[in-house]
Image 1 (cartoon, helix red, strand yellow):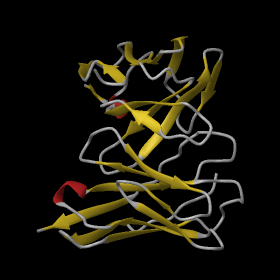
Image 2: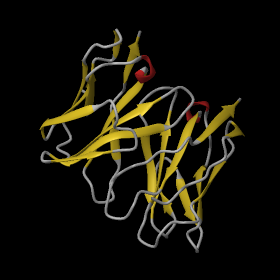
Image 3: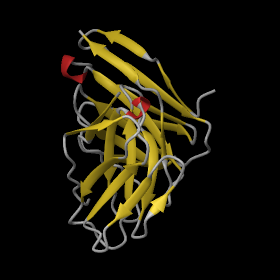
Image 4: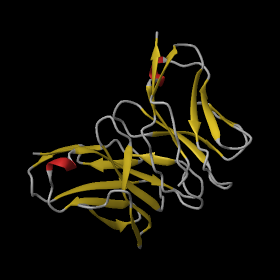
Length: 110
Length: 112
């Protein structure tokens, strides 16, 4: 499994963009990067995933560096409801065995 | 109705008791997972199943067993519960093939 490294915590002002980094320097060429978030003690919620191209959906954007060793999840206009723990995951190729680390605790403040 | 349903949502049990946590899904997915979360920590994979006949151990399977009764049902058992198995347990499903996983709302288990 590709190991991912994320900052323990981050703050963001409401209405501003939240940029959450993830390092995955050991990722192999066919391993995707997934992002999930967990609000309080609820079940984790899928956000987005990508391989090498940047991706965008209604929740967020995912920017993956050209060498694929790191990525950034962008919440363009953070709200208080975006306060959560965000997990970056790179499961092994051809498997959906999702191994979660400790993630980044994002606190959005008014 | 939720796509992934876990029962019970909360349970207090005594040390040494056998307990089963149940998970059912209406997504029609082949892949199902059981995770454990301790306070302040991330999720750790206990067991996973890629179809009814395929069961695999995860990171922390000791003290746990599972049963995949049908495509839609995946149960986690603690044969003899101990206090350090007190945790929040999550079930998840996925279709496979680079798709998202869907999680249940969790079961909060306390072993006294």
